[in-house]
View 1: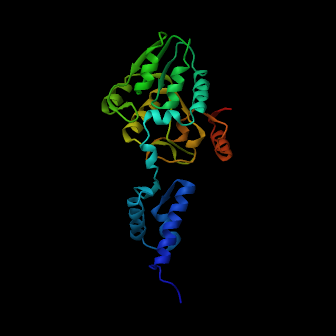
View 2: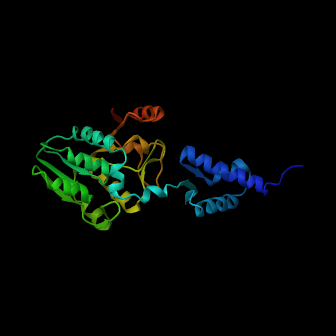
View 3: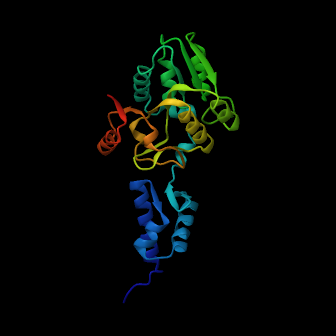
Length: 262
């Protein structure tokens, strides 16, 4: 006897498929599940709603993406302790790309703070940041003219964001932007968990001649809720040697400069 599509078994298989697909690809569409299981989009949306209530995913228009709520709970100090030695090496490699006399932006984040720590005798420099920890680091460097975006302070990330920060950034032009990310996906681009920070990051990229993404390899294949940029807007990526091979090849195929730090 043919089993009804509304049976508990089919419902369970459908939801298991959704979670397995998210674990592998990071996102899924309603149409994908609807066609695969020959059920209505209303049924699929009900599945996604239930899984979201359980904290398994985050719904968005037309589908869902993998939920990473634990990442949103980390403070700036928590994140600094994660892969700290790798981040210091990435920061050193990034600082080697900076020339005296340039104007740069250092995004918020623990990896970009490592860049600020490595600026040393590279002077003079004009450095804009939306990060309180980065600003504190820059304040100790007499060769740096430090600027802050303004805006309101997001306490957990210790970053400034909001309409005032966005407005202030649009008044400037910079040589290079060093941008940290929470998610890096070959097809979906780079992303972050905070909507205000995503908007500020997008404007930073608009006002910089060169966009340099600096990230440890743990961020590859991940998708966060708010998109920052497509990969075609990125000039250089600095990461560690644990980058997945398909990502290494995919980045190079797109004509992006790749700097791998051992």
